[in-house]
Image (cartoon, rainbow, N blue to C red):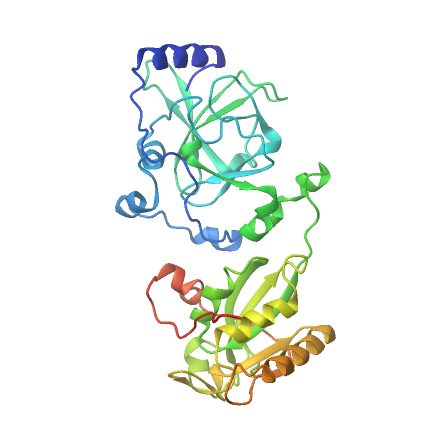
Length: 357
């Protein structure tokens, strides 16, 4: 990528001559990223090339891994004017904001600055017989584009970035996608409302299967699997498996009550497991697999009692519901390998299925 005038002229010439030798298959459409969790990004490990070839389009792989350049004016985001943020297509790391995006006339997404200077790394690039400053993401080391000293902002910079290296997160989806901490500038600009979150803690058997269903429910912001309802401090998975700590395998759920009510969340809960088997969920037996609702407020307690009674009378189950409803105590996050287990291990063990209402 080059200066704005040179880039526009070169693009027009190359396109007209049909000499733009760039990867065009599988455009830069967003891939399926898991929910972004800033506190876990310190442990991010870049997938190997064989994995990336499966998860990225050919164009995304060419650009991010082989320093390719997509066609100007024929890419996903050059003319995108919606509010939101742009993240690394490989890692999900937030990189740029629509609040800093401008029309440079070059046919590529252009920004006056990254969200944080530490999010990008600059390297000297002399590949085209001229010296340019390449821009790469700091976590996944993805090639993004180049930065030039001809921008309109106070720093006079233009970050000229390939759409194929980015995934766009619309402002209305930022909170649920895990980027709620970046909403403040959009709130100040009148483009978003300050999110309100509520926390629920539910237990219904092996937390792997429960989390995989719950994390996909619209309105759920974040899920963490762990241990709740016990008497031992900081239990390990091995401790809980003995059945002597009193803990239940649980899922801590942060959700947006404006999009998902606590009552609706509990309806999902009763649909995804069998609440009639005491201290058991299918082949998993023990108090750690009990059905339980750990309420975090008196209003949650009232709602839980009401929903449980309604489901008990619904005729959906042949036996009485045994779900305990008790006040939430300390919740201990489970070991990292348990978090998003089925996302990381597709086809892994689960005994949960979301039944029809």
